[in-house]
Image (cartoon, rainbow, N blue to C red; front, side):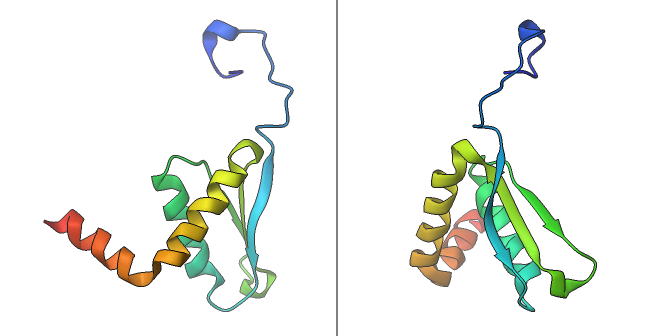
Length: 96
């Protein structure tokens, strides 16, 4: 990787590290939903960038690396399909 000291002088010119939009919303609950999505992705090792405005009506956007976009979308869909019951079960399991 370009950040590794051993690879000094190497620059990764691929587009795999480009950040691409995964989520955008201007709804009143967008900030909460963006934080939930961020938590899901970060807990699975996917780097996330959340951009927002101090004016909520301008919305919230989540960006992920292009190389991880498909995985990120799959994780979000799995969580939506599992529903709130799965989240409650996971939380309860961590409290035991």
